[in-house]
Every structure is written in structure tokens, then in C-alpha cells.
Image (cartoon, rainbow, N blue to C red):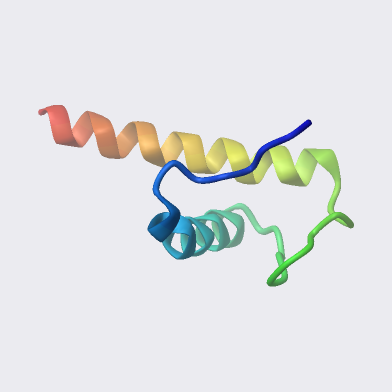
Length: 63
């Protein structure tokens, strides 16, 4: 059973904005709400872009 709950519930809106920003950077059009019509490749590219940005942000933080 999948559980897509945020550890910090107040962060939900910020994570959604972050996802939309990452999607636009890789050229994937997302809608608000359900996006089950996108391909696995598109979903993976959005997730990969999010991880890439999080790693870059952490690397800048530890410098």
C-alpha cells in the first residue's frame, strides 16, 4: 500500500510548486491534480530534475 504523505504537511504546496518548476525546465506539461496520462519517461525526467536540483542546492549549502 503506497503512502504519499509528507513528513511536514505544511510543505505540500512548496513541493507542488517545485515539481511544476522542474517539469517546465524539462519540457513536461503538468496539470494541477492527477497526471496519470504522462509517460513513465516524462515522469522520470521530472523526478530526476527534482533530485538534480536538490543535490545542487545541498552542495551549495555545505560549501
